[in-house]
Every structure is written in C-alpha cells, then in structure tokens.
Image (cartoon, rainbow, N blue to C red; front, side, top):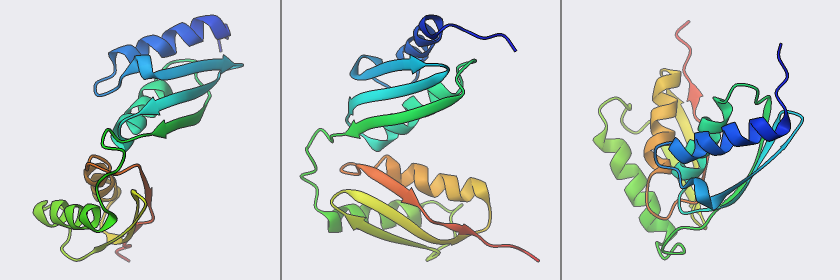
Length: 150
C-alpha cells in the first residue's frame, strides 16, 4: 500500500470538496494527520454536510474522517419544529417506495430522529435522504430498523 503525504492528501481532499455536487468547498476547512482527515466549518444544510463527508471518504488514501462541520441553516432555523415534522411526514407519504405509516419522526431544535421499520437498506437511506434535504433540518439520526423476512 502506497502511503500518501499529508500535504498531497489534503490537496486531493480539497479538490474533491471543490468538485462535489451540492458542497461549498470554500466553507469547509481541511486538516490531515496520518490519513485522518478532519473537516471543520459551517454549512447551510445537513445534506451539504453529508455530501462533504461522502466526497472525502471516496478520496484514495483517506483512512478516517473526523467530521466537525456545523450546520447553520440560512434562515437560522426560523422554521418551527412542528412544521419540520409536518414537512418530513408529507415528503415520506409522497414517496411510494416508502411503506405508509412505517416511519416515526421526532424533531427537537431542528434535529430530526427517525425511527420505525422498512424492508431494505435502500429504503432506510432514502428516508434519511428525503428528510436531510428539508429546510430547517440541522441534523438527522436514523434509528430505522430493517424488517427481517425470516
């Protein structure tokens, strides 16, 4: 296995962030120490934060990511928790790939916790992706279980 210097890895990570769709690479700080990348800064959505982390994990040579990015919604979360919860349920009800009434949503200070059961990992990820993109959402915890078909 070829070892890449921290400086070169840092350049690769910055490039990955610069070209990643939906990521403002200029808003994210990068520090590299022995193939461990630390991301810092502020972004406007949980989706942007997740996209940055995914982009960095794909960079060859990155062994671990310490993600310390803060989500500061553009509206500074002027959206009430009950409105976020209503939007989350509406978007989940709209998607026919997600079983009806299978997901419970809890919202506290813009943070969303998802629970319930779905039939597959792709459905679990789809639910999280839908909710993460909603205005006012600062973070998502996915506690959705996958039903076993034994």
